Image 1: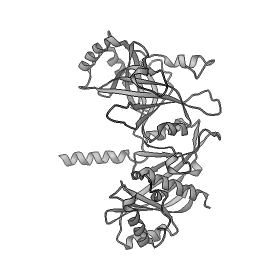
Image 2: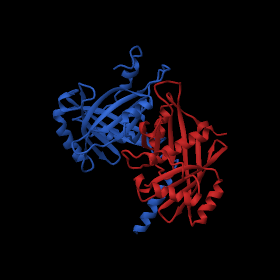
Image 3: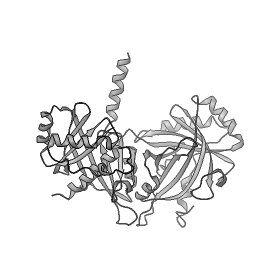
Image 4: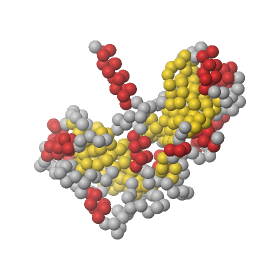
Length: 198
Length: 233
């Protein structure tokens, strides 16, 4: 559990890792995120693209979001991995878009126990699309409790990126508990941006 | 000694992680029915045969199918089931289940079919199901008990349906029949040999004999033999 801030870095993964090692981060292992779009078999107004995601932090879970204008109105669900098998049975309506699949692979660092930073390279097929960084603050699931501190952390460590806060950080009315689904929504948006990039 | 066990468990967990699919996606199943007034007799019999204790359930099941604009002849059915709201708790967990067409195996003493379940949590399951392209065909409410004996599952339940869609209070619920449905099944991994399990299910079912006659019901023949009037049932 914890609150995550995911952003796209302009630097190479190596240089981000060097910065982290410079502040005493410990390499914990590897991580993997994948973002797979499932498109309607025939264009229809009835249903839209469904994005299915996995995160190595939750290896037994599948996250599924049908993106609409913003996160709150998007139909979404957390499932166990059996859902992937059921999706295969729905191929008549939703077809896996292999070409649009984005994979993020990289290293996971731990800084002073409370912070986990994941640095990964995003690839679409064989093309490298960019570098994605996830900063996770473990002790809380309430965004307003840690938002400022996380911005401070990112400013201190990278000296940039802290201006563009994730959408969920800006919502002040009726704040809900942060969940991994919120993290996946950030990955979803970054993946959509990366896909357009050449 | 304890340490040894721990290590073992960790090893298992690693094996299950990432891309492996530890899912049991096949099932052998038999169906039967019993008059509601005789259910207590069945329960006594099951209490003697099964593992101690049983689980009561009160669940709402909806059957969905995939509607594509192309009129394909194969209909994909998806069952969605939730534990019914009780006074004390509202659980927002749903069981999403795919049930395939049975294998055409004459020799097998039970129905063998593909069955994939997934536990799903969504704040608004109906909207989510719609976004997957699923439309509801029918719904019912099932109340009964689950017994186990090893890996055999025995379910007996009475079915009710609602007279007014969307309302599930006792005044609008109507019993479907004066019989209870009995289901005996075993779940198996993907490509496992199903014959031994099917025989186990059959043997167990025969022990309920004078009370319930468990059958390999050809329910799919009814489903598929009338192509003139599909969909609506």
